[in-house]
Length: 243
Image 1 (cartoon, helix red, strand yellow):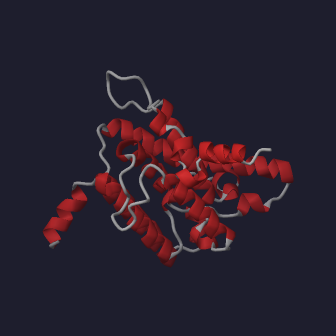
Image 2 (cartoon, rainbow, N blue to C red; image 1 turned 60 degrees about the vertical axis):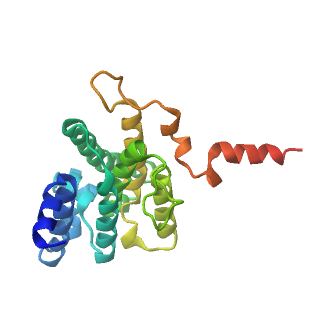
Image 3 (tube, helix red, strand yellow; image 1 turned 135 degrees about the vertical axis):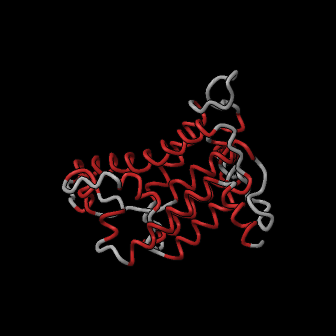
């Protein structure tokens, strides 16, 4: 692909252009902004209590400190954007903005609840940041469109239908083994997954003459799980071992 073709490719994909630009710009802030993680990431004490860094409610979802995590974000963004079809810029724009705010405000609410329940002040000063909340929201959006289509030809068994859950499970594993720089946004992932599915299920307007949301069985939350860990499948196995 020559330079001209690449330029047109980027311009024809505003979601890719916007997210890539913001990810790269905020990542470069690490090199010239002192205490960057406290000024750009979500630190509850700085964002809502002490310094009122309200922009962190948005920037935290696009900020990374690890170049490895940044590259992973860009690869996943390219995968989901490649086949994504946006039929209404207005509807998708609302979904995108609400997904960002759900991740940041939802996580802030969770941290306040934990703080009042435990009294641990470190909950309010622990930085949280990362793109995974947006990624899982975009893949949930793609799931509604692409369903059982494979995410990539190299892994045909991984489809858009179950990728959001697989992605979430992988991040839990990464967090469990202690790779904190790759899982600083784990709360964003969980909130992004549940919010995006709920919004698309009940509130997203797919067409003017159709009711809100996708109420089909294919888009149910349970059916997002791969068959090997599907809740219904597990229940069936449970009954097999009952005396």
